[in-house]
Every structure is written in structure tokens, then in C-alpha cells.
Image (cartoon, rainbow, N blue to C red; front, side):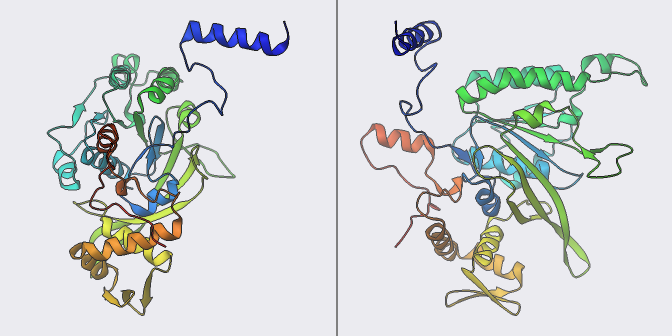
Length: 362
């Protein structure tokens, strides 16, 4: 038996034992583009390279306190629900604000929420939801709050070295394959700690061990860089997100956007920022303009103008899409919903588009 025949026998045995498609050559596999769910920020969707957070992957969002981690998660959930998706929020911190989530756009009546007692319970619930194949997003807020049962039942001052890290490592080993099969996104928010005695380099470290760093396809480092003020009164933050790890597109890209207190990320403001960065929107002094249209004086006024004129937003987005190229997904928010596409194709008609879908011109 020559090498090719031996390989054929081995492949046949693998498929009989583990099912068709368990192993294949790359050119035999149908090319499927990475599906994604928008983050609610056009600049961050562009930085991620696939139009948002990729489906079937682990995502970690980490940063200092009050930097916008949970707000970003709420926006992703709202975008998924907007397309008919089912989402779950594992509130390990027991600090969810349903009114704030509702103002951002989350349908709290349809959102699955769990406030687990232990880290084991939280991750068990997460695994069961993902295995069901019926959930689009499972968000765990946060890894630092996943307290092992032994620690909860123990006394204050007891040492439990590495317990949380082992818990996360075991959970992620079990979740990785299931996520890929069910196309579910698992989002973990994480806090920052500092290592003592570090003289060179960053002393910052995320709790939960190294497993999450390895298994995450996307790692987002979110930082507050400026407080937005109207006179002396603060009304929001300017944040910078760095894509420190990306397995589906080139990493290390950055995005900046506003988070307004009480309402979250204004989509029109992120469209303005991207337009300005790509010289589609021009700035003369403090005035912003698009083609012959005067948008307003100052960023806030220009963003308010865009919020009232969706046709101008569409025109800017079309220009962004043309510059990016037809193959580039600018934002998953601009694509037709997966359910609508599947239904239309099954009936042999062209898939419908959302109101904000962008069509490349030229």
C-alpha cells in the first residue's frame, strides 16, 4: 500500500468514527467568511477587521474601573437582539443596571440574566447555554468576580492559590470547541491588577490566569482618555480601545469613541469620527462639513446634526464603504440579518437589506 492509499484509508476511518467533515483538505472545505456582531461603534468595527466581534470565538474585554467594559457588552447585546438574536448575561459582579441597559438599547424583557453564587455555577450555566446552540451571545461580567466555591465556603484570610486560574482553564478547554460548532460568542470582561515589584515593563495583569489570554480570539484593552464636559459639567468619556490580540484580522489597531453617561455610545458620533479620520468629513476651524453640507460647529453639534439627518449618515457610510473596498465588511450593523438572508435564499429571492445597509459605488 503506497502513501496515498494509506492516507485514504486513514481519512475514511476518521470520517466513519468521528463523522463527515471531521478532517478535510483546505481546498475541499467551502469557504465561509467569519460572521460577526457589531460593537455599536463604527471605528471599533473597522479596527476589528471583520465588522465586529467574530462569531464562534472567545472575546476578552479588559481595562481599569469605569472605562466602559460593561457598556460595550450592552451595545453588542443590543446589536445582536436587533437582528433577532438571543443573549445571556452572567452577572457575577451582581451589579447589573437594567435601566441603563434598556437606555442603551437592550431588550431586557428578552435578555437571559443569571446572578450565580459561585464561579463554578457561573461557568456551568455558561457551558449549558452555549451547548444548547440557541444563544448568540453569552457575556460573563466579570472574570475577577468568579469566586471558586472553596473560597466562598472558607474563612477570610484562607489561601487558595491558583484556584480561579484552574477553574478558568478547565472551563475554556470545554467551551472552545462548542463555541465554534454553535457560532456563539463568549464575552468575558476582566479587571486589572498590578504585580508587586515590577521595575520594567507594565505591572498590570488580568486575574484568572493565562488560559483566557490563550483561548481568546479577540482581546480588547479599553481605557478612558478624556472626560467630555459642557462647560464645567461632565457628560461623558472619550475612550480608546486597542485590539491587543486578533486571530481573524491584523491586530494592534486602535479605535476612539465617546461614551455618553446614561445612553452609551452614540453611533452618529462614531460615523463622524471615521469620516473625519478618512477625510470624508472636513473640518475648518471648529466647523465640520460633508461635501457641500455644513454639519455644525463643534463635534457635539455635528453629531447632533447627523442624528437628525440619517440620509447624510448614509451618504458618509457609502463613501467609507467605497474607500474600504467591496470585500471589506465595514460594520456588521450594515449587513442584512442572517435570518433574513437564509429565508430569502431558501425562497430563491434576493436577500433583504436593513435600513442602514451600505452598497459600494463606483
